Length: 130
View 1 (cartoon, rainbow, N blue to C red):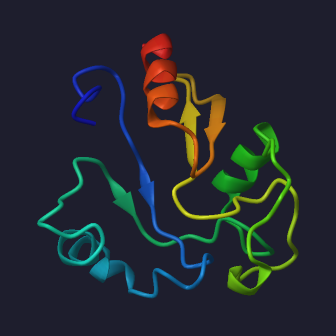
View 2 (tube, rainbow, N blue to C red):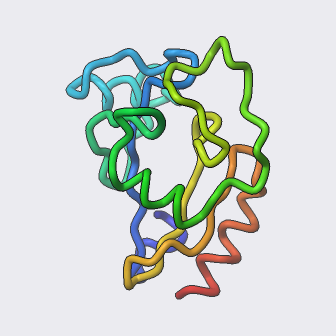
C-alpha cells in the first residue's frame, strides 16, 4: 500500500485459521494480534482487514473458490497434511498462509502468488497493471 496506494490500487487482507491453526483469535482481536504479536512492533495495516474466512474445503468462501478456479495452483504439492485443517483437499487449494491473488481493476483474476513468490515479481506485475 505504501508503494502503490496513491494509484487505483488496494490490498485486501483476510485471516484464516486453516493452516496449522495459527490464527485462533476472534475477528475483533485480529488488529491487536497484528499490532502486538505477529508481525507486532506496532504494525497497523494501511489496508482493509476482513473477518476470518475459510479459503479451502467444504466451507470455503465463494470469493476464494472463484479465485482458485480462475487461477489454479501451478505446484500441486500440498504441505504437511497434519497441519491442514480442511477437507476435501484439492490440488487447486491454497497450501499455506500468505498466498496472494492479483485482481485487475475490472475484477478479473490476473495472477496467483504462493508463499515463496518473490515480492519483486508481485511489484512488477502491479506496475504492469497500473
